Image 1: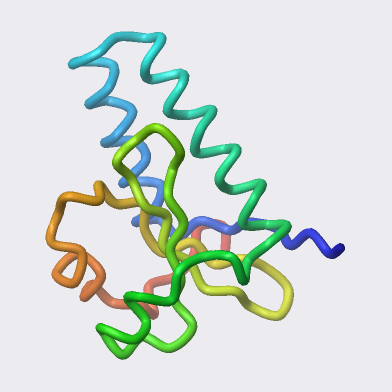
Image 2: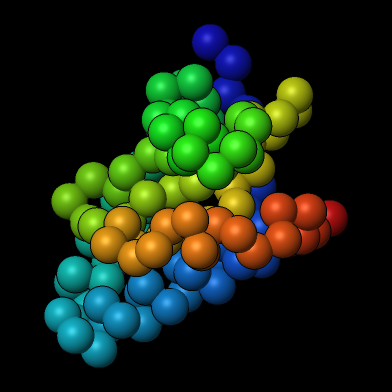
Length: 114
């Protein structure tokens, strides 16, 4: 089994920062830390099994290759594309938002560290 590195775009990092800040303010340190742990676990899963994410939004929005994977026990979805040498994480979005509108941001935005 091949494990690909997970590379987050700047927008995904911003999404994560906003979610952690929300949990810190609304639910406290413990819940915020549980959220971070759940996201890290989801990233590890995606790195090992990128094909397991749902292609639902790829079909609905005509974004070839995009998949999503849920953050367990939290209402967030990780949106990513499997590349030849890495997992390209586009966004980490609250699942009750207008996902199509949030994903309509520029998909060619540079990844963090590129």
